[in-house]
Length: 550
Image 1: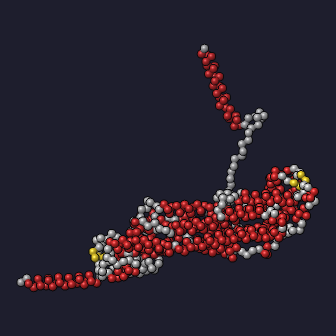
Image 2 (image 1 turned 60 degrees about the vertical axis):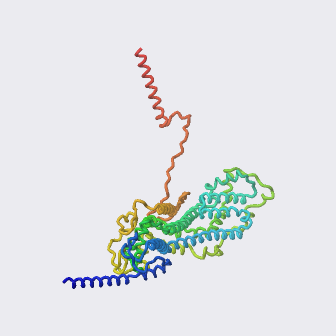
Image 3 (image 1 turned 90 degrees about the vertical axis):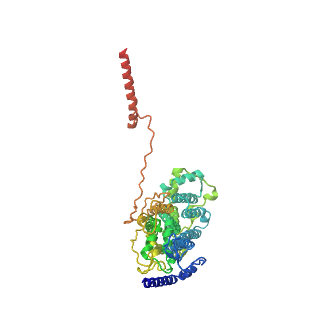
């Protein structure tokens, strides 16, 4: 009676067991083993068929092709792959800052060398031994300009003032070679530089031009260097445990599921990358301000603060100043003699030489047609146009870095239905969180502690902030160490957000000691005397009371 059902049940069991055996055989790990070999891993202990996955800590604990050792190795590989992705995605911006810093630095240094060579060649031809015997002051000038540009703690205004003072002393002696001048007398001459203006308006104009141009050039090159260093540092990612776990799950859990060729969904990748690069995204606001400041200084370099336009004709301008003093030598000498006294006559051998004999016809305007070729084989304008395009492209780089990585076809699968969604093949439904640390509180893929910002990234933010402030000063023609006191301001800078008005510094007048012969005390003195008067009244009052009680 029960025989038939028993036979049927037994037959069904046998069929089910055969079916299960067929399923197990079909879920081999051959593809995973091949992919593991491609990654360069040993196949030792890699299963041929799926095994129970309760030993796994990141990937699914169902049937799997991964052992614990394999999961650990894949976790380490996910860090390497992620670091490589960030490195490759940031390569362009790092290369831009590195290569352009090198170009600008070479250009400026070569420009200074060419300007010095041009001046030396011109002055040797024009002034002969008069120049060669006094060339050290010109060499010192260019040496100090180079030292400032390369980062030295140099006050450009003092350098230029010292140069003109020294030039005045030498010129005055040459123009008055019939006299002998002591060191004290020469020092007295230098005190009259501003009053006499022996070189005309050249020193004032040249000082304004040189200081603004050099401040802009140095700050811009330093900005390129800072941009390079910050980009290189930030590109070396600090991978947190939560990020490491999410990377392993996204990049290699498909391996453990027997689907090594399955790439993650794009929006799934975005959540993982935004979680792992949350601190980098927070660099973006300060980075954008830094780039804006760089662009504005670049405009200055190609415009009113063009160091090429200042340095190329500097020899002609100095020569014009020398000729101006020669033309006004009689008036200048007369005023100096009035202020510093009449110097002692020199010996007969020198007194016979007049002004015209000293300079003769060798003082002549220089034709700049034989000027050396442009520095670095290019012009500053072309360099600026190139770097401005590159700088604009780098804005919002760090906040867009996660999306840039996930946009690569080698990383994600564009087919939303045929991609890895963190569990299986299929569409990824969670929303993509916004970039930045505070927005990762609800990131479904990466555990991020939003209360602990990356201190290293915060250091880079401060570095950018300091450099941005320096660039803003340079944009206004101001040095962060030595403020330019020139009264010439360039440009209106409309729409820039930076003021170009000269900085007003209020100073208190000196406190002069009162004249003791003045019978009228000052208001302050009268105020200070009031307490003494009140005290005297009180004492007299108390004395009267004591006498009354007696």
